[in-house]
Length: 133
Image (cartoon, rainbow, N blue to C red; front, side, top):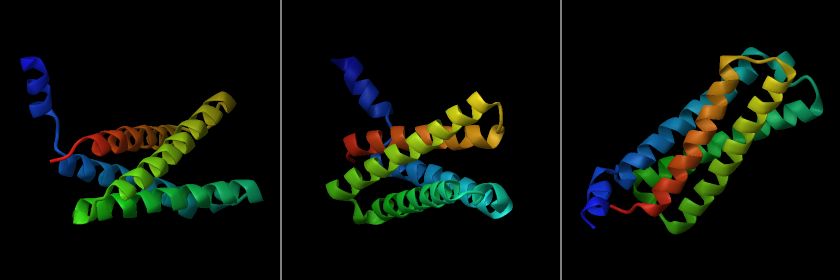
């Protein structure tokens, strides 16, 4: 029984988790925006690629807005659920793109940053839903 209590004490609180979630969302949004801004020929090459790039950016920006709102004191179960859904989409996007790029033998570190940010926001969104200060 004591081990469980020790684990609870060592976990970050919901405010810290939301701060990490907001920071990771900012990294994902900045990474996607930077890709679109610096390589528009690739990002907007076809209609599908353009839609995917802009949809990915929208997911990251919405996740940033939701996590920022939760962090600023407007937390609610509904926002937590919306954040979890957006985090799942961001993780699917990041990991899916990484798999496609690795299979094609293209891409580089930037692709792995997106995948890592996606996995991080999903984990943080799950953790922030289950912890209350």
